[in-house]
View 1 (tube, rainbow, N blue to C red):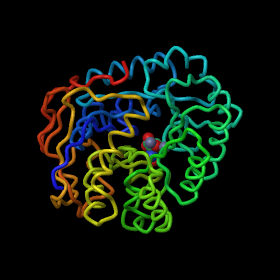
View 2 (view 1 turned 180 degrees about the horizontal axis):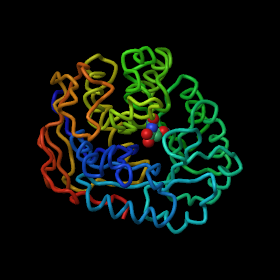
View 3 (view 1 turned 60 degrees about the vertical axis):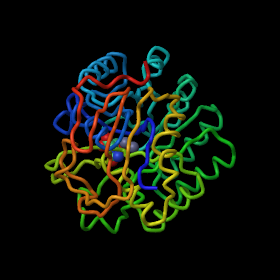
Amino acid sequence: MSRLRIDGMLDPHVHLRGLQWSHKGTFASETAAAVAGGYWAVLDMPNTLPSTVNATALAHKRNEISRQAVSDWGVYFGATGQDNTAAFSSVVDQVCGLKIYNNATTGDLLVDDQTVRDQIYNVWPASKPIAVHAEGPTILAILDLVRRHRKQTHFCHVSSAEEIGYLWAAKEEGLAVTVGVCPHHLFLTRDDLSALGPFGLMKPELKTAADQEALWEALDAGVVDVIESDHAPHTIAEKQAAAPPYGVPGLETTLPLLGLAVHQGRLDAGQIPFLVAEKPRKIFGLQAPPETYTILDLDVPDIIDRQNLHTHCGWSPFEGMQVFGKVREVWIRGQQVFDGEAVLVEPGYGRNVVT
Ligand code: NCD
Ligand code: ZN
Ligand code: ZN
């Protein structure tokens, strides 16, 4: 099979930046990266500046994205350690879900008190999923909340043998959990850090070859629900500064890396639509509009080259890698939005997938 049609590709984990972080990327530039990567829609995380943690910030972000986006989009609401649960009932219908940062990462949305987490799980309406950043043993603390509150929870960027083990067991227990894995954890290890330097720093950090192997085993066993990019652009200057921020871009490299996995015999081509479209749509209860699909030439060799990327940040941790697969066409609502090289629609074409 060389030509693959994928309906309604959805990346449920991106940081589009914009607002006061527009120097890292704008809603226009990063949704251009999304369609160039083959995506119909992206779900934007709340650790922006300002954070999406109250009705005012949410309305402002929705306005800005809707003016600028070329892909369709949705936004998360963010929980805070200072208890913003009073806002939940009025914002739930406007967002794709709730995000809780349970370990430190970019931004200031850390919730590390289990009592506050419990309150958040208690108040968030069951109609929309909760997505969590939880690393290592923190996963066990969150699983305890899932067990008691029975609220559907997506575990973002699962990166180690330990973590996948906890979630494998949770699935066997029948808990309402789903697992996202990022291409950087599938294709890079901490051995790559000496070459990548700050450009290989993200949260969760790159792990060992054994951890990576555990992720591939979980993929093979059907324990991984979603391949999510965790697209998190920072400028080259920021990455080269004394205390570089965590995060790497990824929207435009996910499909070619999955194509590489197919070429290497580590992945079945038939799994790709499930991992990047069907399952993420199902988790977030989203239906793609009619005539919304991507045409991918899966066998075409390519080399990842920053010159060809649409992301504003202008770099990739996968620079120079030999991959397979080229996005040839992306259509949204019967309109072609990408032709393999250029974005064909104006900012504002993208619509909110939630309302
Ligand atoms: C993300 C960012 O920069 O916003 N960084 C990262 O390393 N993944 C935040 C996150 O997803 O934890
Ligand atoms: Zn995270
Ligand atoms: Zn993230």
